[in-house]
Image 1: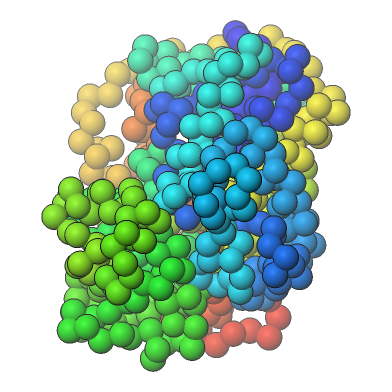
Image 2: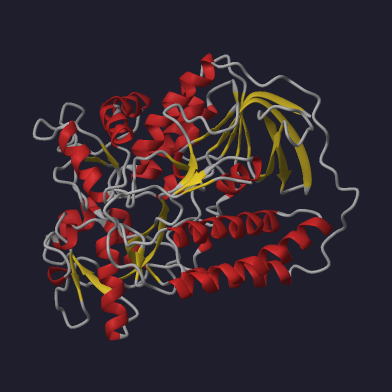
Length: 525
C-alpha cells in the first residue's frame, strides 16, 4: 500500500493548479490515464475569461454569464468566480504563462479577444492554443517540484470509503488504481483525495474531447455516495472541423469573435434568422441553429468563413488552426472551413461547495467533473478554465487547513474470484452501441420517446457490464466503459426530470420555459 498526503486523479488545469497551490511540504501523487499532456485543458483553444480592461467590469462579466446560463446559474457562485478571476490570471502570469500581448515586448498590454455571449473583450489567450500554452508552463513547474510524484498510464478503479471498509463514517481513504502497463491494481491511501478527471464527452459518438473524457470522476463519486446535478446540460460546440481525418479538432469560438461568418453551401448567411447576435450568440443557440439547418437541408456540415480578413491577420491569430487545415488541404485564408456541432462540455457533475468539497469527508472534486452553479443551463465560453483556477486554488487552501483521513491499513484489491476476459469484443461492441444511441437519442434536440429508448438500452448495457465486471479482471477499457454507461444513465435520468426547454436541454415535448428555474439533483440510494 502506498500513502500520500494528497492523491490527485487527473492531469488537466484543475489538477495542476491544485498541486502547485498546495504547501511545499505536502506529499502529492498525481495519476493520469495516459500521459500528462492528454487532457481537455490542453486541447482548449479559446482562452480564459477575466476582467482586466478598463472598459470591462465584474458586473458585465457576471451579467453575461447569467444570460448565457439561461436563468439557472447560482449568482453567488458566478460572483465568486468572476471576482477571483483577475487574481487567477495574475497567478498564471507569475507561473510564466506567455499570454499574447498587443505588441511584442513585456511592456505591452495583453491582447484580449471576444467570444460568443461576451459583451466585452476579456479573453486571455496564447494564440489559438491557450490550453497547451498553460499546461506546458504548469507541467514544467510541476516536474521541478520535489514533493510531487507522477504516475502515467494509471486509471482509478474506485474510491475506498469508510462504508466499503465496514466503518460508520463517510470518509474517503484513497483509491484503487490500475497500472495499465502491468495490469496490476494498486492500493493508494491518501489523507485527501481529489477527483479532477474532466468531463464525459466520449459518451457521444462525435465529440471535441480527448479519448480520456469518460466520466470517471462523476461515476466514482456517485458509486461512493455523492450527489450529482444538472447532467442533462451537455454543451455541443457549434464548430468542430468536419473532415474524415480531423478527429476531435475544434475551430475556436474566438474565430467568430474576430468576425468569421457561418454560411450554407450556397454562401447564404443563416444566423440572422436564428438570433440577433448572429455568430456571437451563446453556444447553445448557435449549435441548435447549425443542427436545424443541417437537418432541414440534409447537409453533412455548414461552413465558417473568415476569408474576408487579411491573410496575415488569420495566420497570426489562428496559427494552429491554419496549419492543421492546411495539412488537410484547406487554406482558411481563401477557403471556407467545413464545420458541424460535436459534444464539448459537461455542465453538470458532482456537487461541490466553494472549497471544492463533495458530500464525503476528505473527497474533493474540481473542474469539468463538478457542478458549482457557475455554468447554469449553458456555459459561457472561456469560463471553464477560469472555474478550474478559482476552485482549485480555494481547495488547496482548504486541504492545507483540514484534518486528513486517518492512515489505515487498507485491504488489497481482491481478484480471487475473477479470471482473464475470454473476449474483448463485448467491450468494443457495447462502447460503440452506447455512443451511437446517446448521439441519436440524447443529442442536441430530445424527445420523451428518444429518452425512453436510451434509458431502456442503458439498463440492458449496465446489466451486461456488471456481469462482465464481476467475472473478469479489470482493464482500462472495461473501467472506462463501466463509467461511461453509469454517467450516461445519470444524464438520461436528469433529462427525463426536466419538463421544459432551457439552455442546452431542448425538448420537442416541452418546448416552453418553466417560470421557475430549478436544478436537477440526483441522490444515490
